[in-house]
Image (cartoon, helix red, strand yellow):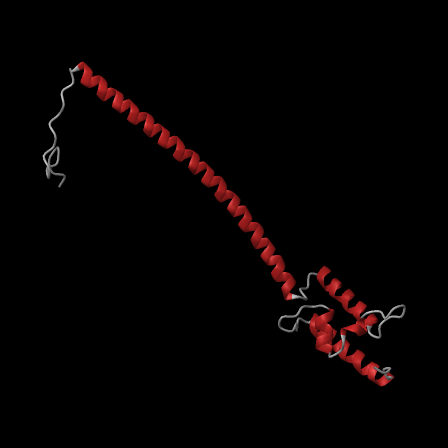
Length: 160
């Protein structure tokens, strides 16, 4: 690849500066971000021009540094330059909220499980007590059984 002429370099720099302005204004290409890769694609330049070549700087390295500085300044000012970054932050907040809700649900579930265990143990104890009382009543013999209800009749009359 040959050397760039001053005219080509100026034209490329103008294209890169215009692309910087578009990206910072929020015109991010679909699937892209507000980064050097998107800048190079938007400006129609190769990314290698933004990086140093051994000991000497790349031809557009100063523009890359300016772009990164402007992106950081915009972020500090609270301007969202990359919608993916705001989406990531929103999703992180959503994940934190969901983790908190899961923790609360786990605590509720543990409480309900403990309640269920207590309720079942009480029912078992009551059932054992009823069985014991029935056995005592059968042994003593002074308790009289009530007649069984006839099928289809209410024990104390109609409820209507």
